[in-house]
Image (cartoon, rainbow, N blue to C red; front, side, top):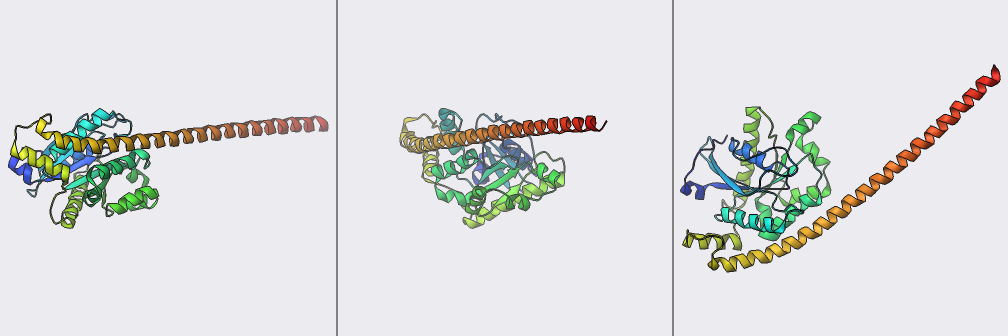
Length: 305
């Protein structure tokens, strides 16, 4: 398990960097803490989200392996403020400019695979291109819920939506189950070991090289040549313009997905109202039938007395 110890900058550059992404409330921070073995990221069960900015923490595993974990807020939440998304995308890319060894897309088994979940995948691909699939690992949280139901991850996946199955296929079916609430040390060690095994698979698939792209390469080059640069420096203008172009595409897609999600929710609500109305009508009809039967019974009793 991680020790949450201090690691110097040179070790950071050569470490395995894992980036946690996903919809707010899916358990990204709790998963990051499980990997680190410490409560480094603020975490609690909340639909509104606790993480308000991207953060990175570093740990050295028992086998000496150094792992960087970058926790992000809901970067691609379809209801998030565009300026917030923009600033956090830039911040996250800045942190990961030396390359990303694995992108951990966090889903909760308690939630359906919605348009918001799909938005995370779509926006990652828009930002980093299809090659990012080769670095994705799906992390399912709330493993304790499956335990209570007596189901395995395979059993859960066999009944999941076709959209989720398609995402898993694109990610090479790399997925792990995390129970971030467990107090069982052996279980916690086992799930982190399984995740790191999946990270090794990603590294093997990609020749040991971290993911990079035009954006990440530009960040790395500019900041390597001038360590005193800030994100507001004028010489970063070409890079910022490139990011802005991509962000506009992402913003449009998020707006479209938000409209689709709202339409789907409205349809579900209308259907629920119809079902409720039908149930009430059935109850009323049964009540009337019961009253008639009761009245007939009383009439029959009177007739034989």
